[in-house]
Length: 472
Image (cartoon, rainbow, N blue to C red; front, side):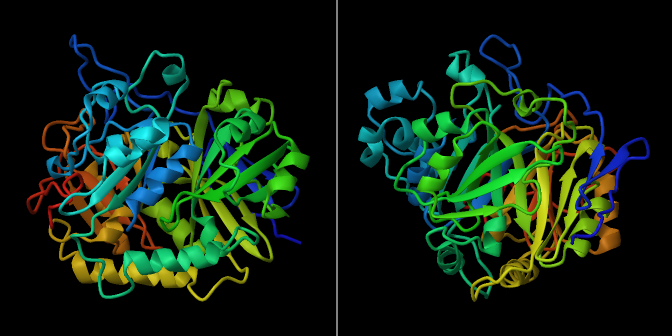
């Protein structure tokens, strides 16, 4: 039997142990901030809505943007407003541009064209000198209602920064090949699949009938949350990008139909998302509406040492452990970034699996990334590599840069600074920088524009975050 889990919660939060396996901390969520990273002046000087603060996107390094773009057809997504290099611009016919709303067309627009207008797919080859990008955001209820929004949907970004080094270990393409072998046909869950993005649907039946591609293999998880409510999760690959597994879950589903189409099925040992409140309906928790919208719920990452990773998240990233599981075959800890003063609906799950995997293990992935970082990041201001594109972002932090750097220094953590290609600020001044913190599994966390009060850069913060041709 699994052991009772301990819960690292705020002093005022209650720790609830459920069924002897899962511990959950209850905490009131902070108010969302309306003036975060992506807010920008509208055409009449009004500020357009910003995305909810908290975890707002997941980015991957890839060698094949085209494959990711084709796979976007299984998700209700829209053109992401983040642009690529000027060198990535492509020629798109005027009628297509009109369909795209007249937005600047680069490799990003290619993703939307391929998703919404299949007939235009071949018209927008996504190639540029230094790499390519495929960035989309999940559609919001406002998008479906025709109201429109700016960067409110969770971002899924695939970046092929082929001009940059991948270190002396495996290349991005070689790691992708290893992940594809581990995924197989999704008949069996592999530890590498624990790197995924979890999305909530108010009705999985509607999602499957509207968006899901029938020929795409998926793994079916059946699970209950800490309050005994039943859920189903459908997990599938997002193109050929390593780690880009999407897991769509819901409490409204047709189990028989899902079982009939699944390549593999299993009962999950722990909740795939840590609801803190058993009285609020899941749809209300996410503010969900019907109509095919998917709501970002969690970023899940595998780790080889959960204890070390959890300690790092609490000490360096100032994350709160809100749920945990300890079992004979796997261990999990769920974190929220409420201590940053942001919305913590989107969680981060760290999973240590003892299940048998393929020849390329979780530890192999960690070694590949960490050795590349050690070889190419000469300082916090100098150097760049393709693996830094493996990261998720926290927007709207109220923590100061000086505090975050002090915490990282005490743990000997690798950090890197980058400016954005667009004037993306967090309301803290013009000299802001994005802080990238490398976690123990080699994946980075982008903390967007912390307050720089009292922080004096020791070097020049370069614009490598948005410029594929910048070498750092």
